[in-house]
Image (cartoon, rainbow over all chains, first blue to last red):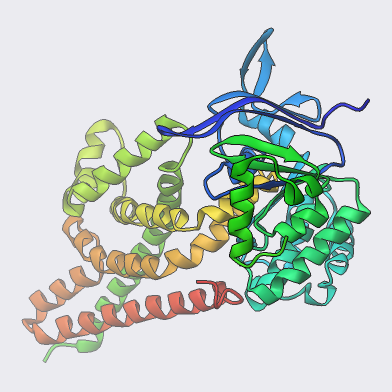
Length: 261
Length: 218
């Protein structure tokens, strides 16, 4: 029996008086591919942002790779994590954003090599060799010298995936990575992610509105509503035979909106 | 008729003093602007306060009064500055206070997205500022820095009040000795204008170089 790589226990998150996550608990096993689905405002993106330490939490505990993410031990008592602890924990986790967030002043290659050189002290030659491998994997080796502004949305997102992979995180978070793309560019990004899922044992959490892709990609699907998990299970179960009415209504609406399941 | 070449030479000597004040004052202003501008964004409250006090004080009091303090009042506290040093200090700190807000504003205008990307890539605060935020904020600062430098150039005229022989001071001398008002004042008008043109042209050049490759981003 392996131990979970992520353990979320009684997690609360409020923005002011708005409760976004409400006593949320779930585990993720190493290598597991998880799809988080649900209506807007159900809290799924917030979970990824919390795991990436882009938000603070209001209550509860998160354990990542056997260590507390938002807490640390000090003199035998548990205290909120400081920046040094967060820095220590972040090396396990990488994230790809909806709007790519590439550095516009740096070339594609420099976007990918910046973090390995700065955070791991990798020599330029080594970082560049690895970056070229990754760019090759996402099919953009010929764009290494381009600036981000010269790329299409799909290409930008593939660079962003390569950039996140360069740090070799054990956990990858994908936050609606195709939502900002023109429909004809979605496929090239999904293809890269499918290959990644097939070829690595990385743990992946995916927030998406592409139900067809979630079905194909995920080992387990979590359906969220109002900051809670309504229903979870293997994709076939969630998409073909959802138990809860809330899930059924959501999927009906998605299908009516033209999405393939 | 007076010996004009001698008088014109006097004004050119003054122009040199004005140029020196502008260059050294701008360097001090730039340093003060970055210290206070970054200081206002510091995570430490004491540094934020110090920066705010500096900025509000130097923006909120007259440059004349600041100059008089630097030259006439500081000696009572045991700090005696040469007229040149006092002039540079007053000009640099005064303009630096305005430019500090430019630094702060430009840094804040870099989108949140960029900060989040650096967190996801686990950069430290310093690395984030040095490699991601400042390179994007600098091109935004340049046009206003150009304005600030020209303001500083024109403000150098106040140092004639502490007997520094800058361009305006020399023009007054020439006027007093020759009784001619038009020629010396026309000459310094043209010289100030030429210096301002040099500043704006070099800022434009710098701006073009720094935004190379960034076209289409904003």
